[in-house]
Image (tube, rainbow, N blue to C red; front, side, top):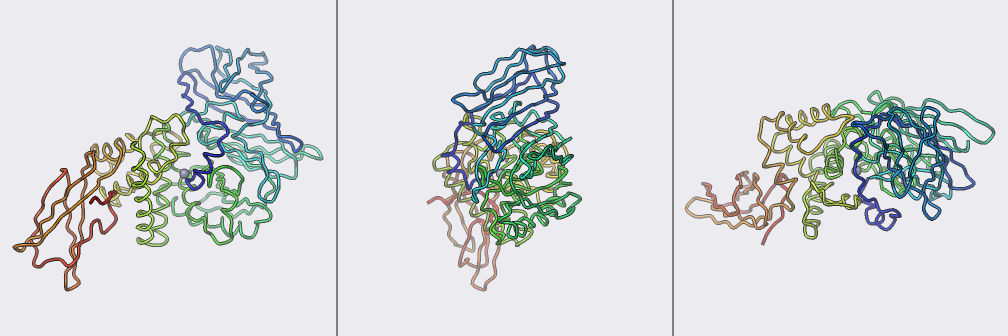
Length: 520
Ligand SMILES: [Zn+2]
């Protein structure tokens, strides 16, 4: 998901995304979603087979599933297990099914989705259907456990009018013309996924197959009116996919489809089929960094997922910084710095009004977590980690972290463990100050040159305690320069450096290595 639609999205929220607690008693193994769509109305007919286990003895399978209210929402018709009807209670956001037996239940339902599956018209007036689940809106159209910690295999069996093409999570397994009017598409993912990234997209599309890139079938799905521009723009995915595969490891999923869509977000990192906003296509490739962000999410967020929403920066901070890394690789260090300056300013601006840490379990409206702490500050934490441990250890830690948590879930502490293992450094203070307390260093310095010494007094004006390396660049009359680094651990400290001559100019943090603001 992307910040660019953040304000718009607040206005668009129909159902506030309230925090759904994860259900510790149930472990879903697999979802098989059957959906029937039509062009006469917005009613979807669903049949869902759920294969589940109880992790402790239980007699109720509790699922997240939005019940009908005021004409919108889902109505359960019947639930079967081994051919027998099960009792259930369905109200509000919960579906409670009475059963002591593990295994498979089949839920039959219908209704008009209030949200989650966006049935609307695209900018050309054509009807489209796009799943839009983040953070926990999947249960507005699918019965499931709507929390990233309970990953499951998934398949979609979508029946829709034949004029449409269907893209969905997983590998295409079947396309059948059922009758004169409807076709069936079956997609299946044998890999376990979080519900936030399992979706379908149904529309009239122009589809380009770009062959296998880094051994992954790559395709572009755009509205037919945008065919030429869209195929040109989305083909950028090739070099992005190659770059991340080389740096992180093999692409997690069985395909990568880049899809023009009509939803809420600027981009949504659905697993193996990324949905981008309509105007991401312009024939000028202006969405390169948006694509890099969403493609980076395939590794971080979709495959190695945060264990809970409070660790969202493990998705968004990673996607933001890996876009910066891609920018550096493609366009050089000046592009990286440009992006880091912009991100640093966003973090500083946000900290003026919001005194929360990156790891933030206080939110009940998850949309509020789509903020500069999760994105830009998360990116800066990774950047400072890279500077602290060096490039080689940084990539080693990233690869180890990914290998360990792919198709699984991680916390910020898990990331720290991998960085400590790769670097041999104790990173407790680093992680503590940057991820569990708000704000950043606010630095004021005074300096003078006397008796062959440069004396500089550095003060930290912010409330919280930070320790960090601080670099100055001193430039001299003969155009030479010198970098001087201090380890800052105190609120106020004076350093003396012997110099041959007085510097003519001084700059703080010349290499853009520190998240800080200037104090006065
Ligand atoms: Zn994102």
